[in-house]
Amino acid sequence: MRHLLLALPFALLPVIAHADEHHHHDHHDEHASLGSHEHGVAQLDAALEGTVLEIELRSPAINLLGFEHAANSAEDKRKVADARAQLEQPGRLFGLSAEAGCKLDEARLESPLFAGKGHEHEHEHEHEHEHEHEQHDAGTHSDVHAHYRYDCNTPDALTGLDLRALFEAFPGTEKIQAQVIGPNGQQGKLLRAKQAQITF
Image (cartoon, rainbow, N blue to C red):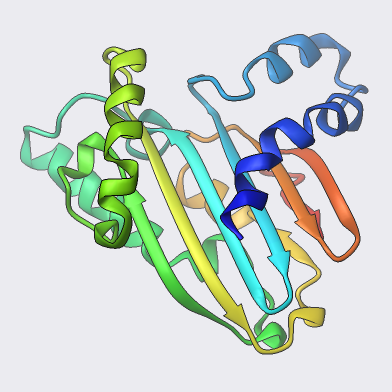
């Protein structure tokens, strides 16, 4: 299943390029940020295949925490703990329909700021080199990568994602470049707090 998510950023580049053309004033800046570390912008990939829903969220840490440095002060550590707590309860953040009966099978959070804590133990060796590479390229920048896998009893009732709660929980996130694969094919859409829904 992960191959679908890994292929999304490449498969959907043309889709996103056409999906938001009416934003001429910032069209270039928005789409140039695909795959890059840009404050205020996050990437979300989702794939629904059969009863399995996988969601990946990548975001600069500053969008979620308000900072990117190591958490040294008590206040910074509290912000990290608060962000982790919200990311560990993703059902609300993604607005999953209750009728779909989706149960969280796996949640994995990865970031240099989380200091190895979290749910990444199943795949930590798989991603260890990847994160070393990301940190080297990013310099002083820190990213948060969250991966979730759900099993849905009634996937037909899952018509899409609603990220309004995510924007509310993390107001430093201004835009989310969402890319999805579902029963109706694939699509990409640039989401904002007031336009936070994407359908499968």
